[in-house]
Amino acid sequence: MIKTENLKVNLPGFDLHNINLSIEEGEFFVLMGPTGAGKTVLLEAMAGLIPVESGRIIIEGKDVTKLPPEKRGISIVYQDHALFPHLTVMENIRYGLHFHRIDEKEADKRLNRLLHELDLAHLEKRLPENLSGGELQRVALARALMVNPSVLLLDEPFSALDARFREGIRSGLKKLHQSSGVTFLMVTHDFADALSLAGRAAVMNDGMIEQTSSMDDIFQRPDSKFVADFVGMKNLFSVKFDGTRAAIDDLKIELGRTPVNSHGYIAIRPEDIVLSKEAFSSSMRNSFRGTVSGVFDRGFYYEIQVRVGETIFKSLITKRSLFELGIQEGIDAFISFKSTAIHNF
Image (cartoon, rainbow, N blue to C red; front, side):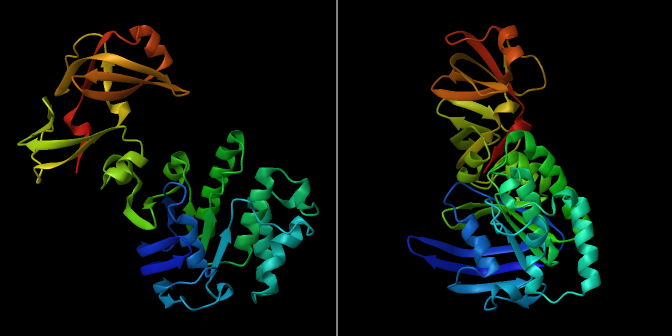
C-alpha cells in the first residue's frame, strides 16, 4: 500500500538516511522514537511537504515522489490540529472538498457518517476557539478523512489531550480506522497508544530505522541496545556467552539456550523480575541474593534496585507488595527470573 525505498532527506542540521518501510493496505502502523529522531520529517516527506533528496515513495503501486501533496492521496493531522480559526466546524470539515472532485451525494453521505462516528453533529456551527481539546482533535480527523485519503498520517494525535480524554479518543480512533478502511500511520512516543492501536511499528533513531516488526517483537525481542532501552528494558547488560550461560563479570545467568555469538547483550523487563525476602523455590532458573540499593516511586508502581555483586537489577512491584515485603534500602532480598524472560542479541 505505502512503501518508501531508500528514502533520503537533507535538511539543515538533520538528515533521514535510507528509510525503507512497507505498510500494508488498511494497516494501523506506528512510528516511535525519541524527540528529534525524525518521525515528523518522515511523515512530511511522505505527504510531499518537504523535498526528498533521493529514493522513492510508492502508494498503491504508484510512484508519488515527485507529485504535489494534493495528488498523493494522503491526509495529515498534526498535534496542534491546524484548524482554520475563522471557519466553523462544518466549514473546516468540508474545506478539503475545494481541492478534490468528489460526487456531491457521496460527499454528503461521508459527511453524515463522520459527523455521527465522531459525535460532531451538535458542534457544526461552532468556531474552533469554542471547542475542547478532544473536540478539536475529532474535527481535525473528520476534515482529514472527508477527502477519502488512501493514507492518513497522524502526528502525535493525543499529545495535547488531558489524560482523562486520551482513552476515549484512542478508542474512537480505533473504531474509525476499522470502519473507514484507510491505512493509518501514526507518530507517538506513548507506549500505551502504540500497544492499543498498532499491529506493527518501527522505531526511529537519529534519522534511521532501528527496527520494524510486530509490537510484541519490539517490546519483548528488541534488535538493538537502543531499542531495548527505548522500550523500557531497564535490565540491559553487556555479557559474554559460554554455552547456555551469560556472564556479567562473575555472575552467571542461565539462558536455557546457546547463543550464536560469544559476546552480546541480554535484556530483561523489570516486571519479569520477581522480588522476595527469601529464596524463591520454583521453576525459575535464575535466583540471586542481593542488597536493595534503591526504592523509587514510579506512580502506580515502585522501582526497586537490587545490587548483586557489582550488577544492579531493577524490578517493579506494587505499593501493596512494597509494604508486605517490608522493602527498604539496605535490606537483603532475592531476585528471580525465568530463562524465557531473558532476551539476548
